[in-house]
Image (cartoon, rainbow, N blue to C red; front, side, top):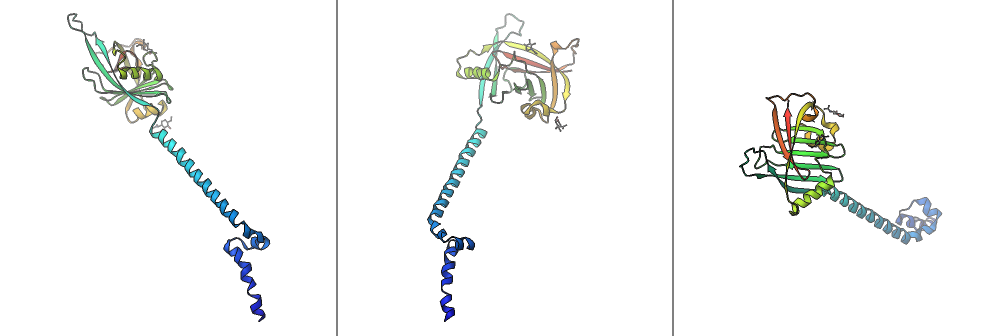
Length: 252
Ligand SMILES: *[C@@H]1O[C@H](CO)[C@@H](O)[C@H](O)[C@H]1NC(C)=O
Ligand SMILES: *[C@@H]1O[C@H](CO)[C@@H](O)[C@H](O)[C@H]1NC(C)=O
């Protein structure tokens, strides 16, 4: 009989903390715990909401990062300029204009202009990809016909800074700018081979890695250099200003 009387209260004591799955010692010390049930669930709800808010914020920030990564704030422009060909010494010959087309990827954030010169239609110059790095003050020409890369200090009197270059191409695109101009010739000589293009900045590295790369110097800046008859020269005609430049690159 005694046994039967004592046993029923036991489950009653155990039940509350079993239901709440709280540690036994808490339930025994603080019977009020049982009344915290509703507060607990609202707390859990708040925590869930907070978690959802974090996930949402993550999605928004991540989305913005992906957007910025895949949709960079630079634009590829197409432009064409014509230059007056006055090479012809026969004065009776009609002057004519030769067109130079270009694609320019101008990244103001990176201080970079990447110029693509496709195979020209009417002249004997080489197709090329040109990188002007305004931070490193370097220009690299990749002659796409030869597959060689040439590096020279950036000449700021020939290459407009990125913002002005964007303005130039914007004008060329709207056709409000008369794209008839003149030709400036420059002649470069290969001085040495560059074996490691890692130190030339990421953009020139990407252009020239795996290619034979050479350092150039303007011919008029080399004292006492004899022009050799058997020199191997290639020309690239391009524009990064209101005039067309013919860069003649000669291998000694
Ligand atoms: C930049 O180009 C101009 C025009 O071709 C030339 O006169 C000048 O010497 C060049 N400057 C440098 C530093 O090479
Ligand atoms: C090129 O130079 C960089 C740094 O100057 C160096 O880390 C790298 O190993 C070099 N690469 C080769 C192929 O020599």
